[in-house]
Image (cartoon, rainbow, N blue to C red; front, side):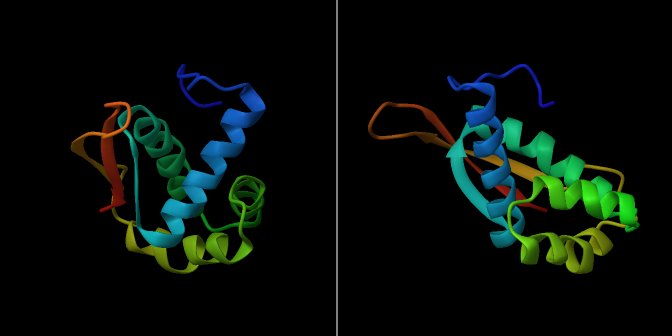
Length: 113
C-alpha cells in the first residue's frame, strides 16, 4: 500500500487514480500534476520498474495486476526496465512548476529520467 497520503479520496478511488497515473506516466514518459500526487505516483512507479527488472512470471503477474493497460505493461518489460537494469532506484524526477491558476495548488511535472 502506498504511503500515508490520503489525497482526499476513499482508498479504492485513491488506488484507481494512482494506477491510472502510473500507467499514463509509463506510457508517455511524463505527466503534470500536483506535487503531493507526484510524490505518491513516484513511489508506485519506482516499485513497478523495480519489479519489472526481474522479468519472470511472478513479477509479470504483479505488474499486470497494477498497470491498467496491457500494452503499457509490455512496454515496461521490453523497453523501460532494461534501460534501468544497472540503476538501483531513482528512475523518476519531480520538477516543481509553480502554483495552479485556479486554486494555487503547487504543481509539478513528474518524468522518467
